[in-house]
Length: 87
Image 1: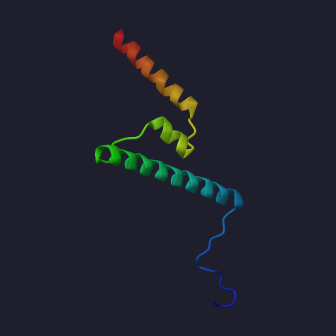
Image 2: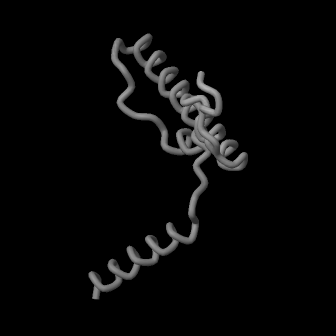
Image 3: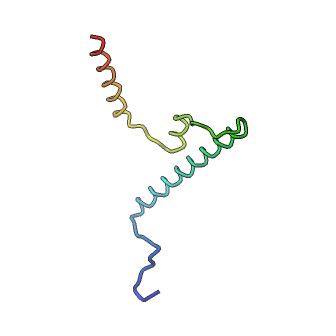
């Protein structure tokens, strides 16, 4: 390595961003492991991979945090459309 030349395999990011990346990677690894377990169990019992996984479990494993205000606005919009449809 030449003098003054930084390692080209490294990047500099703020610590909080690094910690966030590690947390995200950990969640991704957890999701991969969960999916692999689901497929393995299903293959043992049926000979086929699983076609789906319970969304609530996937949300939990991935660290998903709901945006409750967004979902409430969607529900309200649905209810308004249904009211208009029934009128």
